[in-house]
Length: 283
Image (cartoon, rainbow, N blue to C red; front, side, top):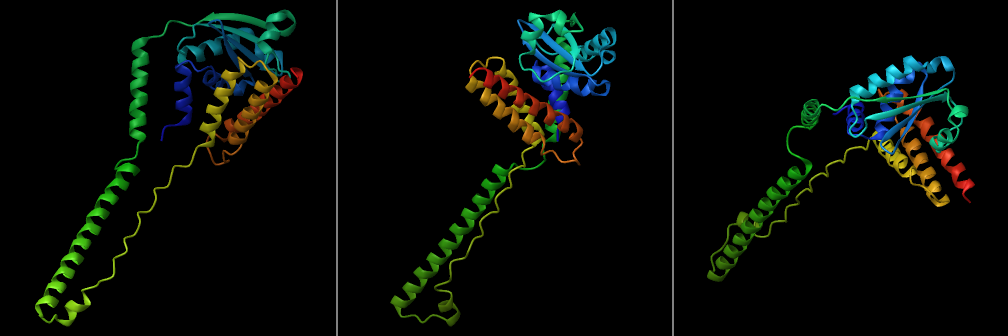
């Protein structure tokens, strides 16, 4: 099975802003820094929040973010504007707020430029990932192939039995017409009961992964949130963020992603509440 963390990093390399945020949050969690981001006119606007200014030291945080993003090398993202502020109530329109009054909203802001992507390195990473996915596939037949094979042999079995019974009945009728007595065992076999052929057991469908479902739902909600305009749009976003939070909360404590899932659950619920507040303002 492919590790979902590897899958998220692959999405980030392909330019998914939502996946980039998840990778940054996981790498910066120990420093107490939480990030949000949005792509604005070709520039990735990145917001870094923490409880204290010491956690948002400009030089340290900038170098850490640069290192993470250079290793990811997200497709289509070259310019990144890092904004920092003390953590506050969730705001979906945070970019408009800091652009309107950056001195009041931010501790500091700094733009960095990522180096050009290496196409050979990108091809090598894609090749390694595809090999990993192929290696994760179970050996043997697929459920569809197994079901088709069972139906094939079932058809042969039923067809053979039907021909045998037909031949026996024809022989019995011919012997009766000619007046030839039948041995008792043959008479008993003249009308055999139709054999019951057991239906093939249905192939169980794989159990959906609530972590992956929540990530995909949150990514779509984040994208649609950039174009939401009416109260109905924000209510729909609030519902989708809440659904993503509910799915993430289903990740069991035995799962290696449990800590990440708990953080995502809280973040998605905050996004849902913020979307509800925005819907109320537009009524």
